[in-house]
Image 1 (cartoon, rainbow, N blue to C red):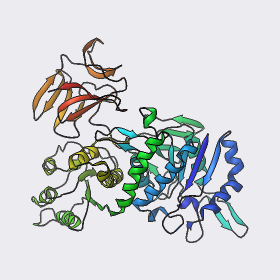
Image 2 (cartoon, helix red, strand yellow):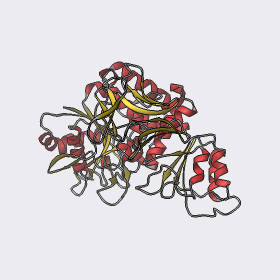
Image 3 (cartoon, rainbow, N blue to C red):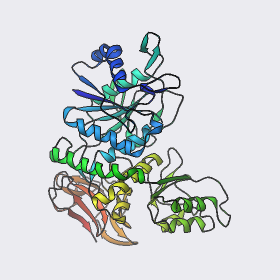
Length: 489
């Protein structure tokens, strides 16, 4: 297996007092001289390429604190430039903003259409890792291995995890492989620096390598959609060119909601929102309480959001928070403002997703409605998919359309119902579970009999709920055939 190691800087590659990234060539030589035999023994038959071609503005590497959104694009471009020559990529990165990069890279290494289906898709592992302590120590005799560092375990573990060939962006830290856009930095003092509150690890490495409970993303739906294909890679590079040219101009304001003067005539939160918009914000991410609750502030906060001409995502300040329907009276008013519930996306993932999609919108011709729907949809596993059937839709579960007020509810007593604006547009013949069977969507009754089937579709079709028109369509991810309507009003 050919594994490329790309160094961006960060603690793992830093030395000196104060710590600063060493030149890329010096770090690569140290890894070869001091760790080469150990890594070769741990990875028999693999070939490592320690790349030194990545350069940020100024010509060197950076502490991750100093990385800008356009630097995510430089990292993504380096992966695409080297894509054909390697089977996996391990990216050495500082821990301060590793979760931001882990959320942004999937958006930059995949290209999506209006329905959120991949037109160009990552087919190889891209694993970010780093350390809480430097990998090497500078002495009067030269560089030596820093014996107390977590750097070697993380580097070796990331390389072992790459051999699983999971086609997605991940973060490896302290023995765990986490989906990159689900991870959060949770500690600056413990070696377990990252966690994933809504998704269990993809894999764990201890005495052996063990697949985690979370399934990996599926990768390309067809060979011509994989980044291995030059045409697909060209799509990704064209998107990257546009995003890199304007992403630093994105001003996504992330505002935490805190107990404050919400009863005042002009509450602080309302002023912060209006100040951000007056200052040129191109999007807002609000971190609400609990399930995304935000005080209305005597109507002033509601009015500020109603006036926002940019996308607004409501996330939760709770590490394990999830924002869906606004159940509480304290937050029920939010629905009427046009703000978007972030589901179980972390605020970090919400910020990075909005920044990249905003920057890519002109390239793809996405209008405000399409951009809003894409912010809701799960594109790279950054949130639970709410508008498509993944596995059986069991009784008691529901889908909600990303592009409007349409609901598919699988009622335990009545069976599946397609609803819009409170009206039932379609009613299934009996209770049961909805799931794909071969090339059809089927309603399976409790006794196992097939109560209903849809028209035939492609075998890999994905059932997606849409509001325009209200229907559940079977979409072929490879776009080799037109969508087939399964349920419609």
